[in-house]
Image 1 (cartoon, rainbow, N blue to C red):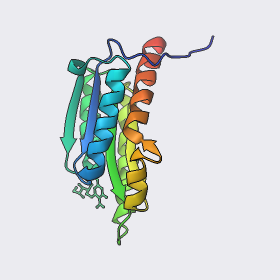
Image 2: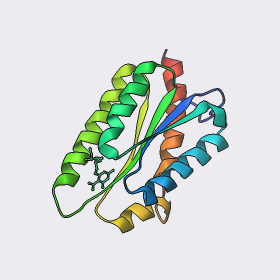
Image 3: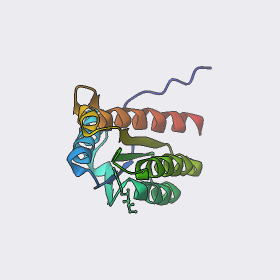
Image 4: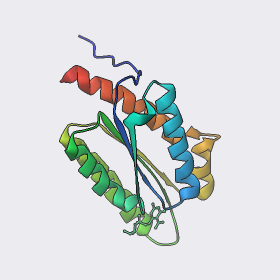
Length: 152
Ligand SMILES: O=c1[nH]c(NC[C@H](O)[C@H](O)[C@H](O)CO)c([N+](=O)[O-])c(=O)[nH]1
């Protein structure tokens, strides 16, 4: 049997957790995710949005929302740009681990946190040369939500 989930969002309830830090970038990721969800049939009223201070706080919110069991998928959006200190490595590692852990509640939680070496790389992935990571993870969220329903 082949499980090949559709990328149609009708009837899905989605949450977006995004961080304010580097909001010049994360605002664009949010726009990309919202636009893509709606263009794939998710009702705007079925999209909840939640803001946290920085990427490090994303896992806390994602896990809380996943535990509620109200959503078909949760999208996380953030932007961590390497700076002069090793802070970057700690933040990136903890965010990735924390978002992955949120999947333990049985709801697909999609990792849309940019981890880049430069501002230019982040801009490229926020609606310019390399597309929009927010839109990409929105498609992944819809597919995983439908796949999850198939597997229930
Ligand atoms: O989202 C980010 N948070 C960052 N730091 C804040 C962190 O996510 C927490 O909000 C903060 O440590 C308070 O817990 C970043 N840097 O420090 O570079 C960054 O690039 N991106």
